[in-house]
Each structure stands twice: as C-alpha cells, then as structure tokens.
Length: 274
Image (cartoon, rainbow, N blue to C red; front, side, top):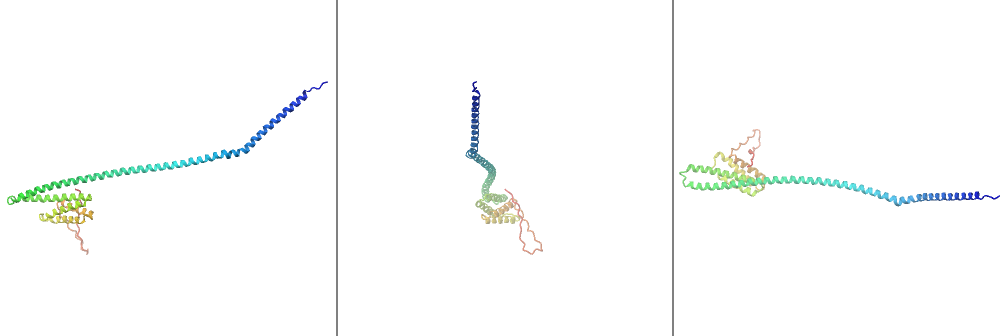
C-alpha cells in the first residue's frame, strides 16, 4: 500500500506561506517603526530647521508690517498737519494781500487829495498874482476907486486866509504821510501869511487869529521830534480857520473854596478831515 505525499507538501507549503506572511508583517512593522523613529527624531529637526525659521520670519514680517502701519499713520498725520499749515498760510497770504490792497487804496486816495490841494494852491497863487497886478493898477487911482480898493483888499484877505487853510490842509496830509520836512514848510508859510493879516483883521477876530498863530508856533517847535503833538496843534489851528475864527470859549472859573492856582483851560473843537 503506497503513502500519499500531498498532505506533506501541503503542510510545507502552508508553513512557507506563513513564514512569508510573518516576514511581510515584520517588514511592515519595521517600516512603521522606522517611520515612527524618523518622525520622532526628525520632527524636532524639521521644526528647528524649517518651521521655526518660518515662524520667526512670519513674526518679523508681522512686526515690520505693524511698524510700517505705524509709520504710515504717522506720515498721514504729518501730511494732514502740513496741509492744515498750508491752508493757514494761504489764508494769511490772502488776508495780507487784502490789507496791502486796502493800504494801496488809502495811499492812492492821499496822493489824489495831495494832488488836488497842490492844484488848488497853484490856482490860488495865480489868483494872488492877478490880484497883485490889479492892486498895483488901483493904487495909481486910489482917490477915485477907494471903494473898489477896499473890496479888493477884503478879497485879498479872504484869498490869503484860503491860501493859509489850503497850506495847512496840505501840511496835514504831509504829516499823515510822515513827510515832516514839507509839512514844516507849509506850516511856516501859513503862519507867515496869517501873521501879515493881524493888522488888517477885525478886532473881534484878533484873539482867535493869535491863538491860531500860537498853535502853529507850537507845531513848528514840535517838528520833527514830536509829530503827534504837532498834528494836534495843526488840526486845532486848521479847525479854527475853517470855522471862520470863532470866539474862543471863556476859561471856566474855579470855586472859591479851591486855593490852588487856577490853570487856564481851553476847549478844543474836534478836528475834521479836509
């Protein structure tokens, strides 16, 4: 009776397959263990070599972005402040331009008034020359033209008063322009004209005329060192002439109970602009 070899081959075949499976499992376990070991030891290395620098760079980038944002905000604030200052400077420049325009207008008006006064004086000088010529002609026939001569004398006095007023008007303009030299010349000329009229003027006007001359003397003494005082004296003298030499106000008496020496006072009429 013969023995069947199939069961023996089947056993060894199964054992071989089992051994191959065991080797396979061991290889898989070895691979898994290698992966675990690689992860365990490689993760810190990767973190230190790659991830940590990336995080540091990210932190630096965030810091740089924050700093840039702060710088941009600061620059924006500075730009806003500069724009505000520029707007303020433009406003001031506009105001200054307006002020200069107004000042130029006032200067133009003063120059126009001065030109007008100069033209008036020129016309008065021409009239004075004409009257002088007529006066010389009338002198030869004084006995026959006494009334005409008196009229001409009155006109001449009025003309001299008008000339003195115009001289003081121009002197006031020169004083406002701080041209003290020309102002002094006009005040001196007006003073000399009025002084020559003292003997021909009515008695009731003589005291006021003397006050005008005194004011002009004070103005001449004040120029050019004290122009403000000179302006006041010229204004008062001019006002008295313009008003036709009115009577001066009487000094106000002090009560009897006051034992101090009385100080004479005078009322100054407010000045007018010519």
